[in-house]
Image (cartoon, rainbow, N blue to C red; front, side, top):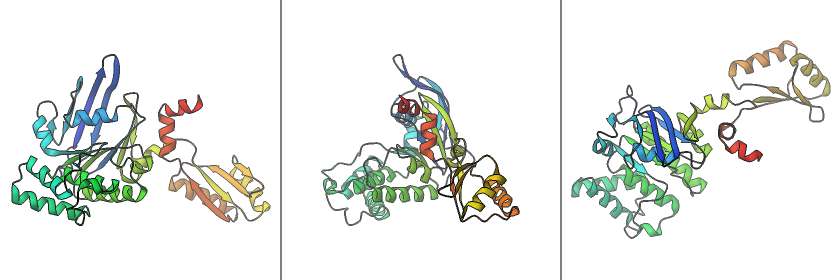
Length: 316
């Protein structure tokens, strides 16, 4: 599967959606490069699922221009549906059918034909490690197996863009990481993933770019590292073998926090490699020996709390 890397797989400009007087989306602009994973973060009610439903043609928007896989969502909904797949928050698996039967049913819906449908089902059962479970009722599957089958059903039509709306909710850590690996393999094949998730580690692990949504607006966008660098609080911990080295380092570095009992200095730091090299050069020029060095940079939890109303709620 190939992707046109010169044209965004998803382009959104001025997207607006209201329910009565409640504004859910208030002028959203997004651009998702083909063959990448884009993650949308935000608190419950921020509008993440609404965006997914609009872009996948399930509901309409009040205003805006938006394309998916090169097709205008409002003028060419059939072409959009033919190019996308979607795995929602809740499994679409029929528990009264076997895994293989679920896939063959989906193949029929895609008009693949009997022989091609069987071939595609067998291929996906193998790809998602469900061969042994293929002949068993989906009702007997674990949560992780059911989620893999759900994704396999999404892949029957060989979509170029896949919307994953909180796909790992309720999964155990092992099942979640197995699904992460499948997502990485899909992106390596050129598929574009649009991911919403409540798990910040998930976005950090998978996303090439992240947008943070709050109160219907995008309040920040960038790579995971770019977003982390926007949040203050990064620092380096320097531990020394004795009090003499500690005092000398404190005088050399100036404004730092110190813990005399632990022989520790905490130096504000932006996480950049060149800044770390400069710091170590200053210590080396002063012939100061550091016994231990650790770097702390803000994580996506810090970003999320800083940029959304969750921070305000925590204070109340």
